[in-house]
Length: 282
Image (cartoon, rainbow, N blue to C red; front, side, top):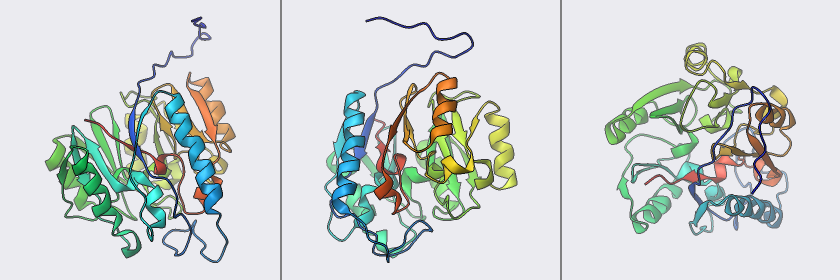
């Protein structure tokens, strides 16, 4: 195998194979409206959603990921957004408790899967939407609130995992989960290990991000509008929305390898790459 020398000043990035949970969008449609992206009056194409999702699934396999699948359930069209199904760290799965009744049954369905796969499951008390709002950088959990997950769930995270939990408040309803406005590029941490959309956060949260990640990538409005930040990285390869072209450029300049995929049909439900991906950390 021939290794190419990176250009001067560009960091050398290291990939780490991931273990993830996904759910095929066999029942995907937009039949209700619980976020600004959803328009139930507009048609959706379940077969197209499946084909696009399959490309993401195959991309992960090609990257050497260990991909697990949870069975989709009829009547739960948003179950494809597996990231919201819980938060898994240190072999412990903290279950989801959804803000809206339409998604409520997803929480128990995912907890059943976690138990069957050998995880210790902690039942949620507070409203939370899993890894959609909880992202690990280094040893710190960054936890979103403002639209879906209640700040009280951040206290539950602290008790369960014994980690530092930093609260970030979202203020733009189009970016209602943390993973729509904040991307972890290198889970080991560091000043350049994330990307985010500054305007999605309140002033106090922006100050935290600026202090902790002074070399972070800031995406533009166009890339944010196609959920470009809703991406998933193994530390070197970053799977992103294919239309997030400036984000792709910035990633390459930082030594990452962006891989664009088209999930435009699932975007109609308000989700992208990361929404379809729940990381399993034993």
